[in-house]
Amino acid sequence: MIEKLTAVPGADAREDPDEDPALLRRVLGLRLRRLREAAGISGDAAGRVIRASHSKISRLEAGRVSFRAMDIDDLLTAYGVHDAGARAEYLRLAHRANAVGRWQAGADLTTARPDTYLALEDSAALIRCYAPSLMPELVRTPSYAHTIFAIAHRESAGEIGQRVELLVRRQQLLIRAGSPKLWFVIEEAALRRQIGGSAMWHSQLDHLAELAARPDITVQVLPDHVGGPAISDTAFTLLRFAATELSDIAYLQHLAGAQFLDKTGDLDRFNAIWDRLSVCAAPPEYTADLLDTLRTSVSTARTIR
Image 1 (cartoon, rainbow, N blue to C red):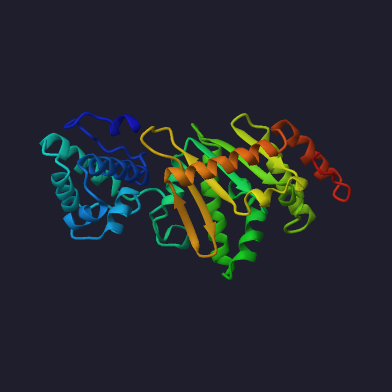
Image 2 (image 1 turned 90 degrees about the horizontal axis):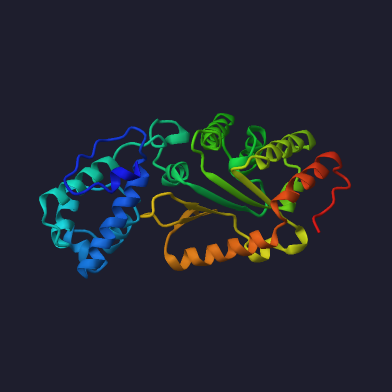
C-alpha cells in the first residue's frame, strides 16, 4: 500500500481493497500541510481559500475529515501546484481516502460512526499501551471485557455484547499475518485486581501469560512500589506506522471522549513518559514468574522487587 502513495505524478493509482482510508487521509493531510508550509501560507489564509476556517484546515491536515474535490483543487492552486499530473494524483488519493473502511460500515452500535482510531490501530506497525488500573483492551478476554463494559456503561445486555464483539474483532490484529509489534506496560495493581471474581481473573491471567510468551508481544509489569501513576495516571496508547511519512500518534481516552495527539512536542513528552515507565517496570523475562505466582497463590502473591 505504501508504495502506491509514493507514485510519481500522473502514475496509475488503482484502488486496493485492503488499503485503509483513515491511513490515506493521514497521508494526504500531511502532504497538504507540507505544501501549505512550503508556500508560506497560514492556516487562516488556507481556510479562506476553501471558504472555511483555520480549524477546518487543521482537521483536513490531521486526516480527521473527508476531502472535497473542489477544496483540493482550490488548495493546490493556492499552493502553486499547477502540473496536471500532480493535481490528478492528489485527487485520486483524495478519492481513495474518502472510501468507506472496514471499521466504518454497518448500522449497529459497533460501527455506527467512523472511528479513526480503530482504523489507525489496525494499520499500525508498533502499538505501545500503558495500563495503570485495568488490563489493556487488546489483551482482555471476552468475559473480562464484558464485566468491565457492564460496569463502565449503563447499557442493555445487547449493547454490551456488541462492544465485546467489536473488541474481539479488533483483537484479530494480534493473530493475523503481518501483525504489529505490541508492547504493554501494566501496573501490578491491575494484575491483582480480581475483576469478575477469581475464576474470571485466573482465566485473564492465563490469557495474558500466553500472549506474553509470543516473540512479537512484550509485556512488562510496573511494581506497586515504583508508583507508576505518579509518572502517568492516565492510560494511553502510542501508535507507530511503517510509512515514514506518518508521524506517531498518542491516543488517550477520558470521560469527555477521546483525544489524538500528533504534534512533536506532545509526542516527545509521551515518549519520555514511556521511556520512564519501561525502564522502571520489571524486565519482560520476569513477567511469566509474576503471573505464575499470582495464579497459584492469590493470598500470598508477592510483589516484584
